[in-house]
Image 1 (tube, rainbow, N blue to C red):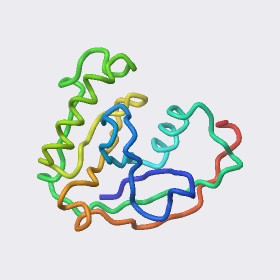
Image 2 (tube, one colour):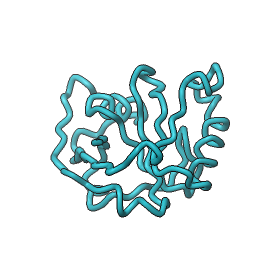
Image 3 (tube, rainbow, N blue to C red):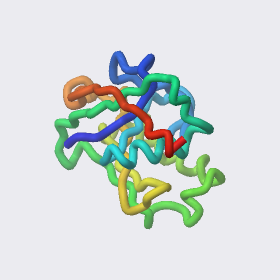
Length: 150
């Protein structure tokens, strides 16, 4: 399976996570957020940044996941609160993600995208014992923003 992540070039030396709290994790939980498609990765980054600095260089990561079904925990919309797409739901979603992260039952957490709920995002737990064995950087390439998105 291949998933995608777009990041500033200065953070493109390796598969690292910032440890900054987000929708599905708390501070100091090192999770790499990926999408199942490049286009969803673009949309997610545009939506979650106040602005995209097109003068900065960005890289597209293609990440190979050598996994089987037991390596993925799937969270469906039916398991989430009705307001799961809103910022108000972050504390509940962070609890779900934090429990997944700390218990390390699976390497990957598959969650619906709040932007395109028919598609999925994939969170990679960098602290999981199988991370180095099952996750690898397949390809890194320059990502040039189309100015119409900015």
